[in-house]
Length: 164
Image (tube, rainbow, N blue to C red; front, side, top):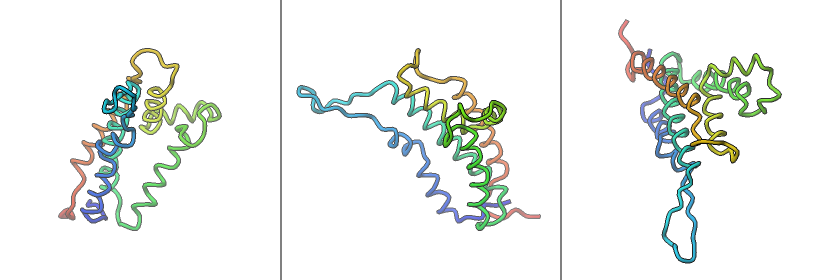
C-alpha cells in the first residue's frame, strides 16, 4: 500500500509536527531584568513540557505514516484521520473534562496515546506537582506507541505502489 498524498505534502506536514516546531510552540520564556537584559530564564516545567511535546510529535508523526499506509486514496485521508482522532480527543479528556467521562471510557482512552500526551502536559504545568514533573508512565506509553508506529510505518509505508 502506498500513501495517497504527494511526497512534498506529507513532508511539509511532518515538518510542522517536527520536534523543532514543538520546541517553538512550548517555547522558553525570556524575562528582561534591569541588570540581566540578555539572559534566558529557563523554567523547569517548560523543559519537561518540551520533552513531552517532542515525544508526542514524534509519536503522532510515525502513527500518521503508519495510518497513511492503510488509507486507500487522497480523498479518504482526511475523513479517516478525523474518524480516528476526534473520538480519541473526546474520551481522552482533551475536549471534555475527564471527571465527567465514565470510568470505563477513561480506561479505554488510557490504551491510546492521546490521553497520555495530555496527562504528561498537564503534569508538567500543574503547580501542585511534586518531584521533577515528569509523568514517567505517560512518557513510557508514548514511547511504546512511537516504537510500534515506527515498526508499522517502516514495514508498510511506501511512496511507490507495491507490486502485486
